[in-house]
Length: 114
Image (cartoon, rainbow, N blue to C red; front, side, top):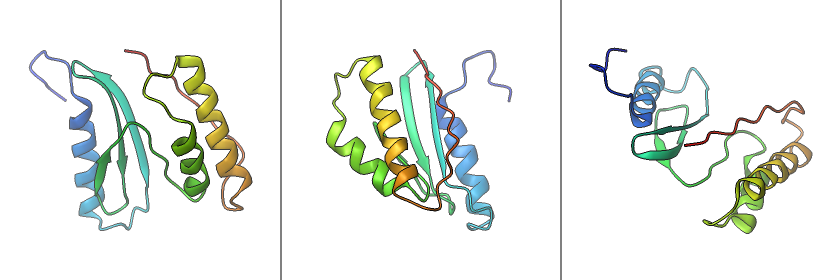
């Protein structure tokens, strides 16, 4: 994408994804979590299969998301260290996997630093 020499914004990616999903009215069946850093700082977006979005400090998507969200809601703090945040994510994913038969068992994590 040509941005005229400036850095792309995370919200631009979010807008492109939600427009594509809206165009297909949920038939793509993709529930997405989009995260990234730009000149405005770090961002996390949730993008639903029909194209609706939310910008939150943390989010979960998928069949194990209720159990994972319960872990986030009880353990998240705004002033967490990077190590504490990673441990919280690991616990949330584990809760999602073990409390939902539809969840897989292979997980990749990605740490995004500003």
